[in-house]
Image 1: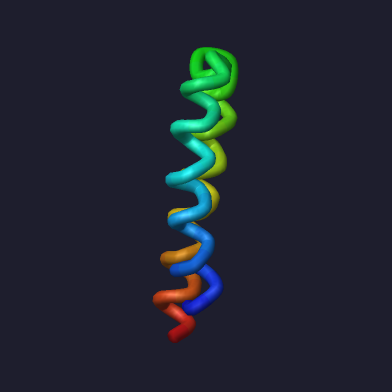
Image 2 (image 1 turned 90 degrees about the vertical axis):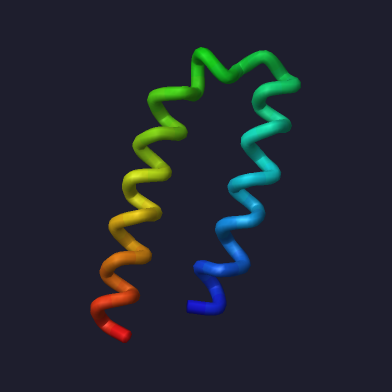
Amino acid sequence: MRLSCSFLPRQVIVGPRRVAAGEVEINRKSDTRETVRLASTLQRLGVAA
């Protein structure tokens, strides 16, 4: 769980950087998929814990 907690803030930081880079429209779909995968992984960790 510690790894996931330290991983989330990094994703939050990466988001604005992509916005500044103007790649938001291109990466929206991939970002959504990554978010869904991350959420499912956190749920699995929660169930396992």
